[in-house]
Image 1 (cartoon, rainbow, N blue to C red):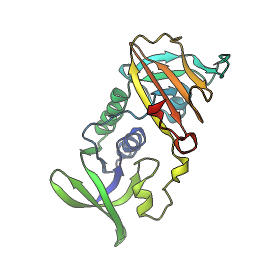
Image 2 (image 1 turned 120 degrees about the vertical axis):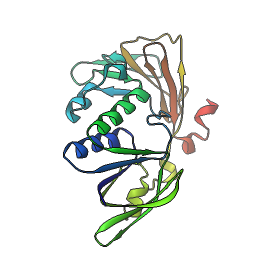
Image 3 (image 1 turned 180 degrees about the horizontal axis):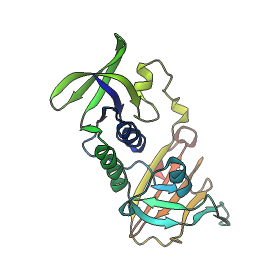
Image 4 (image 1 turned 90 degrees about the vertical axis):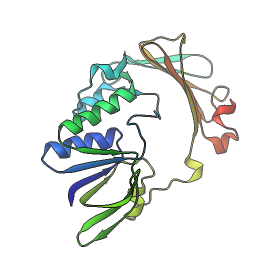
Length: 230
C-alpha cells in the first residue's frame, strides 16, 4: 500500500506530489497522456501574484514573456489598460512549465506513471483500491489517500459521490492557434469583447517570445454556432 495516489499530472497534481513527497510520504502520480504538459488547454497566461501565493518558483525556461497587465477592448474599439500591483505576470511555455513541476516532484521522491488511466476506485478495508489501465494491462493500486487532480469534471470526485458533471448549457466552445507575426503590444495580454468578434464570449491575444496564442471562446448553445465557424 502506498500513502498517496494522485490522478492527473497537471500543475495541481505535480504541485501536490512535490508537497507530499517532500514530507516523506510515498507518492505515485498517474497521467493518462504520454507526455506531461501536452496538449496545452489554455492561453498560458498567469499572474505572478498567484505563484507567490502558492510558493511556486518558476524555472526561467518556463517563461516565454513577462507581461505588465491586460488591455480590454470594447466593441467600439475603445480599450482600458489594466496595470499595477497584482496585474503583472507571465505567458508561459506550458510544456516546459509542467515538465519542470513534475521534475521537482520526482526529485522530492514522487513516482510517475504516464499513459496510465484510473478507470475506477472503491473503498475496501480502510483503503482505496484504484484500478489503473496502462500499457501493461489493468492492475489495482492500494492507497491510503487518493487525490483527484483530473480536471473540472473529475472522475475521482464522481467515484466518491461528488457531483462533478456540468450542464451542457455551461460549456463554451473555444479554439486557439499559436501564430507568428501578430501585431500587438507585447507587454500586455489582450481581451476583445462584442458580438461581432465573439458572440457571448471573448477573443484573446497572449504574446509570447516569438509567437502569440490567438483564440476565442463563445457560449456555443446560445450563440448557435461553433467557435471554429467565426
